Image (cartoon, rainbow, N blue to C red):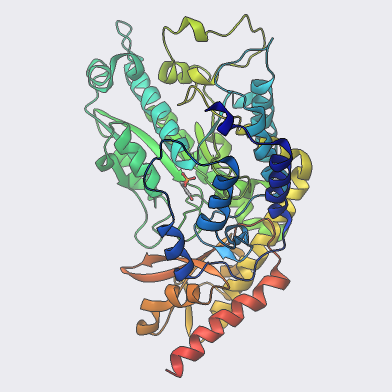
Length: 507
Ligand SMILES: *Cc1c(COP(=O)(O)O)cnc(C)c1O
């Protein structure tokens, strides 16, 4: 039986090199396989477990020919503009293969046996340096499976902290949610509700509130009526001030729908920090892709640079690796300034066989400060990509992405048939300065607008995702691939959009 699990080395090496070479194929023409190809592939998925299994070679053939026929790297195409999930830099993609080959378990810090945890610590430190979040001030830094998981961590830490703050004046009691659970901890703290005060939250933040027993209903929108992404500061203060209430303030640093940032500059962040301190609130930033605005330095990006200023005043920050960092799925990260909170929340208690040996360095085992115990070394692709491209590489990459996004937005603004969203009475120059990597728009013709996203996708030349705006359909470019090149990519985008308009008018 064990024989059929082996493969002969020559076959393995030949297949491995062919598969690896797929990373360096040029960008494909089609960003979507045809529906027919997808339907045929779905039919070939194995449904019944066999007793004897298939061979190594047959199984790899099955994956390549049956499940991913004619794979041409379409999901890695620079013309894929859906969901802010860009691509994977070549060095990150190869490092990800090595993660599988080395097969390290990055759960426990074992300094005499492995440097995996040191690599992870270095990777989060390099990332902190890239994002101007001084690693020494952000001692709780972990890799997660994505921004959703990071938002769960953020609200879990916030929940622990705000109840702890509420009880701080009562010396007779302890208040850890991790230890006592929500009900008892809140009762002892004399709190009757916890609210998450936010604007334009990502769905995953609301999901995190549900998972953590805070409740989706605890998420309260405090946006301004005329600018829903911005905080209504008076309302924020009133809600923070409510008796018996503990609060987490959640800042959307680039909303996934519009790309707009909840705060506009350092002053506003300082004001929110002051309020949070006065009321014992926790500030969590969801910067899944927005946090990367902190790598920018060019004056053409001044509005984005301002919007990212002061985010270092938060208590915790969510970031995504598999979005603008362009490393493979699954990779997110979570940073917090609090050294004491994580072990109250995430400790993996009474597991002596997992205890860290006598480590004298400051590295703690992930199993006590994050969600998982056993986990892959997802730090390595991040480490590799930051090592290979440096801060300038990432600055250049994001600069090209913003350039294309602004070019698309300008085309939309100049068009008679499309309308850029949200509507604005600012000048064209001012609007373009606020564009980050998301371009939200709709067709002026209602009939076309209903079919716009489908028609663009049907070209198979570019991929966009559909969304909603003011109760109607809208369409969205999320530019997030390391290969983005405005000069090469804009003409193709214009061509597709022009053709959609022409065929609609001549129908
Ligand atoms: C994408 C995104 C998330 C969720 O990220 P996943 O990596 O898909 O879990 C959360 N918040 C924001 C702002 C996002 O853009």
